Length: 120
Figure (spheres, rainbow, N blue to C red):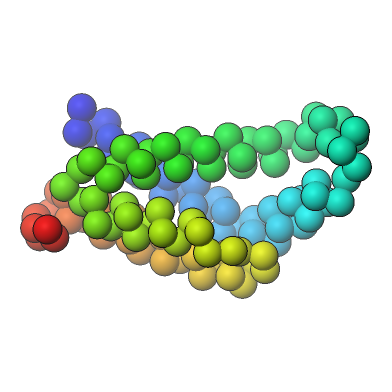
């Protein structure tokens, strides 16, 4: 079960790389969605499947981080969770968040299988 949990971590690292590559597009789509009138939002989402997929992965990623709080790497998962509360309204802020998240997630993976540093 532990191996499956950390294989999912690799999937979320790939997700972070995808977000880094498409940061400007994601920011623009979210701004368009917020400026869409309330009665047209469902129609807007039906035409933008990537935004729906991004939101679904974001929710799964958040749930994964909450589950990670119960692992031996809880402090690092808490760091990733804490970074989610920082507003990322520009592409530069989002890319900086993604780079930090990738580094932390890679450290979690390396620490579990190679370094074995007891954080707390």
